[in-house]
Length: 231
Image (cartoon, rainbow, N blue to C red; front, side):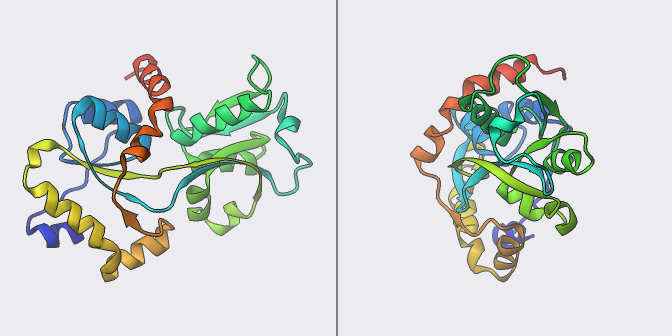
């Protein structure tokens, strides 16, 4: 609604049924603007020519959580346990799995990883006893209902990385500068202040090349997973 008002034209929101379809449609330039995780943003920039616009100022951080009354206090104690994760293509899942590898849980059979498709499902799996731990993000955890959020506690965290980014397809031409200006002014608008507060994204800033380059270590794995996933 804000962009429609600023640009003086309708703005419609679309998505795809899954990550693979979303990535494919982005690579084909289906979307004029993408609101996307940073590793998908880097892929869209490098391989589909999308132009970076803006990103949330809050950084993304993965968390490993266990049930609040669980005896587990460290990553080492997860050996032989079940760990629920969001979709395997989610950046938080990739970072979380790297954290496990860095802590000696990389060998086959060290842990059992359950892909349960979403952050909510991952934490619910812990709450319901279907997994001893879950990987989620700090932002997602804060956005969950209090009863679910308070049912778990954090035992480890990943390093921080850039959060969700906005990019535009080059075909938008001269409109790109206006769209970028509107996005950067969103925190000053009344609806922008409410949205950023309620969603926990803090603010919006321009995207630096360093932000995008920080995603390069994840691109090879992202592309491999996209190629091997079923449609």
